[in-house]
Length: 87
Image (cartoon, rainbow, N blue to C red; front, top):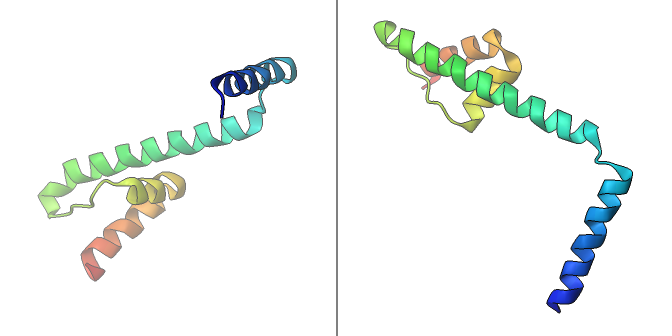
């Protein structure tokens, strides 16, 4: 595809977004989800920091952060239970 066509399509999309505005609902939902995942990672960090005394370690990755972030403390307790009894 010609560069002129690509640039004109992108320019048209930018003008269209400026005139109509961005859809705020999806952006807000994604932002809230990312905040919850970060909070979940923080929960897991503190659990691992204080859980070393009791030989508890739950790895911090995207899945465990999402579980502990969206479910809160019950999700964190479920991750600990899975770590202790299943793994």
